[in-house]
Length: 123
Image 1 (cartoon, one colour):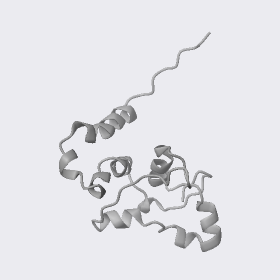
Image 2 (cartoon, helix red, strand yellow; image 1 turned 180 degrees about the horizontal axis):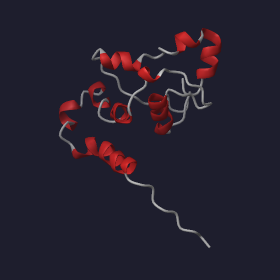
Image 3 (cartoon, helix red, strand yellow; image 1 turned 120 degrees about the vertical axis):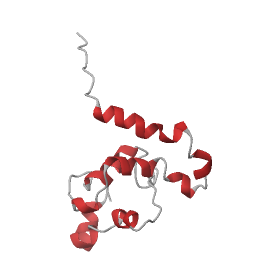
Image 4 (spheres, helix red, strand yellow; image 1 turned 90 degrees about the vertical axis):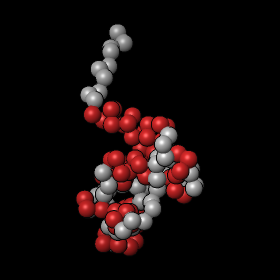
């Protein structure tokens, strides 16, 4: 929907688009949900496009597709890309205590809460 949201709204209407897919509702009901890409068939390998779409509810063109209530917070979206994938591959027990499993969350927390580094001039 990040790439084709405008087309979807044009074809089916904004009301239908607001709940497609109903990620927040599925999570609230306890459904196991993870995140990923369609690789190069539909989208880029770049995870930031998907993360941005889940958090902001906006398409790449800037259209507000989802109401705020249907969007996710940054940590939930990132966990869907990292930890939550283990349920689908039956690796929860094997990776649950792993430092590597939590490192993306810790890494992002420090980067998000820290001010951006200053860029040096090349002159």
